[in-house]
Image (cartoon, rainbow, N blue to C red; front, side):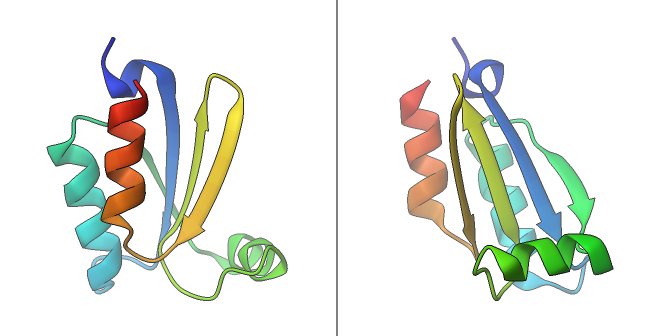
Length: 85
């Protein structure tokens, strides 16, 4: 089964000027992981800060009901998602 078939991934970004956001999306694509991109608007930013995240992107993942999230470019976490599927 492909990683994207089991993983639900949402990437909250600051737009094309965010280098870490661009790197995250490219790495997800390279590993064949489908994702939905959402803007870090006022509401999403407030929620991210409340969860302790301080940098973009904020990545939220659900695999078979297990939830995880992180901020910043984390190729190690993306690779782990790909291996989990």
